[in-house]
Length: 62
Image 1 (cartoon, rainbow, N blue to C red):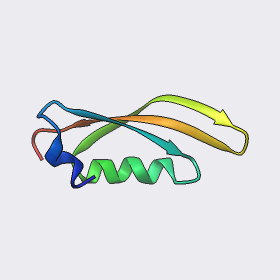
Image 2: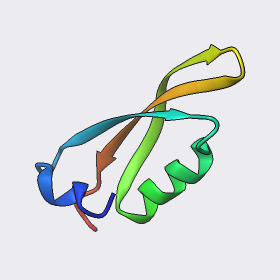
Image 3: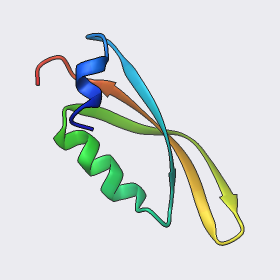
Image 4: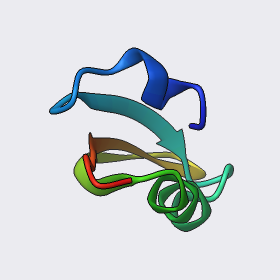
């Protein structure tokens, strides 16, 4: 997350596919720590895990 900020334009966004096995809440918290505003924009249940797409907008004030 730290390096991603350097490659985005001021209003840039990233889309990240995350598994519930990774820890969705933890990924979103890390995004916030690095100056992004994350929100889940899609989700799908795949047998034993849930997959979510997180859209994270870069906050300009950080």
